[in-house]
Image (cartoon, rainbow, N blue to C red):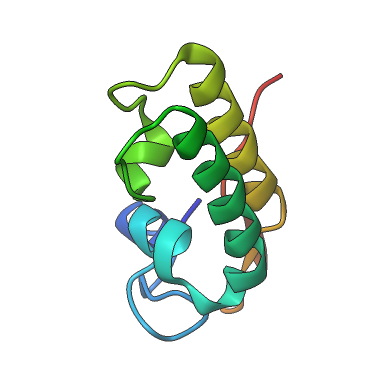
Length: 109
């Protein structure tokens, strides 16, 4: 779970990401968090290739990553989701105050 969600459910006192920059929302995690910059570069590269092949003008946003975009085939959407899950697999959050680990996403095979 993202800290914004953990906070909203009452399991954390604060919604702020461990990077300290902002609330840890899907947009923050997927697009701007400095803690996952290298993984995000790989994600951007993968998505850029897919979008070029699809001749799409879409930009990398949380909406593109989480829902199909216009002009993107199902296969391309699955490839985008696979790239997203590779990023998610690198990210396990620890709530330092209570010592709990939260997986950001739980992809189901």
